[in-house]
Image 1 (tube, rainbow, N blue to C red):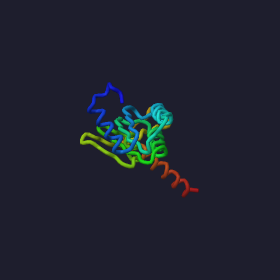
Image 2: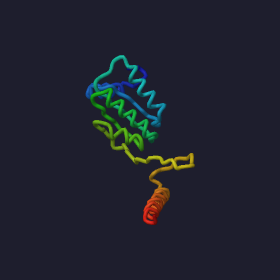
Image 3: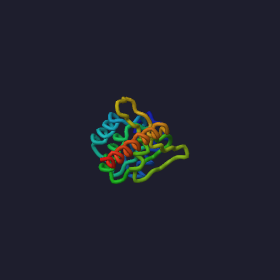
Image 4: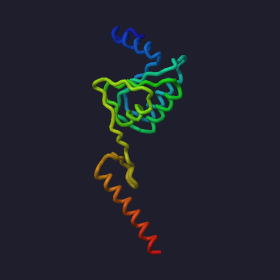
Length: 156
């Protein structure tokens, strides 16, 4: 281990590695395709791997597809995937947590919400699927479409 890391932290890391017989990964960033690619390539390039992995994750979330790719890769590359959460692990981070074999959380850890972003037709912006006004608007549009189909099928 690097000598730049304080001795107590080195001891903590060594303890985690030995106790879990695992590689240790730290991911503190947005979850997106670029970061997912970097993580996956870093693991692929390792000359030797342990059978298990411990991922320390802190994120405000990001792309659910990238979260799925990260989780799927960790599950395929390792026998056991343990997730450590010490702070924020929001949105796409929570999706990664759902794929872990084991989750270890501190008193300050936070999961959720699963805030999937919705892309509306003819609109380049994404907005939260949890937005009540938007949810009611989409529901209203879908109800009208269903009514229209049923009404027209009875007329003909």
